[in-house]
Image (cartoon, rainbow, N blue to C red; front, side, top):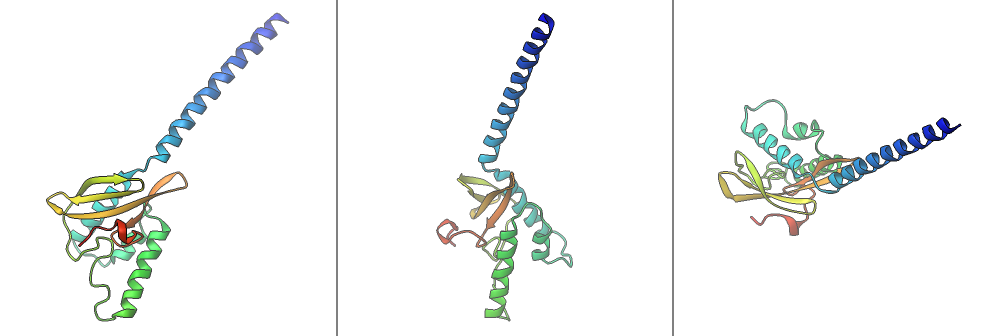
Amino acid sequence: MRNLAILTLVLTMLSCQTNDSKNESSEATKTQQSEPNFEVALKFINDYLDFLNGPKSELAYVDWVDQRNDVTLGFKNELKRVLEEAERSDPEYGLGFDPILDAQDNPNEFVLDTADSEYMTVKAKDWPGFKLTLKVKLVNTKWLVDGAGIINIPENKRIER
């Protein structure tokens, strides 16, 4: 009987330690998830520049964005909406600039400039005057790009051109 009491006590103590470890791990995960992961946006925008500056393929940039798993569905839908609306308004010229970069020209690489809540500003590595606003959003425990240039970026957060 005494051995059973000791065994029960030991198992109870081990159970408490396991729960404490799980709670600490859960708290660490919550903290990581609550802090925006701007690296995902920086990687996305630099991959986009590589796509634009690389050998041109048959793949349109809208299709390139559609294939990305680091971008929200809302971003993809808004990009398509903006482009379709521009084409209806002006079939000959369309939008006239890249809505993701909010510009006609583009640099070779971006680096982080500033970050504020879910928004970040990047600047061109070799063209410091060229800046761009991006937005990240937590979706199912994963940070995704939800805005860039004029796509899902409110006018007051956009870089003035």
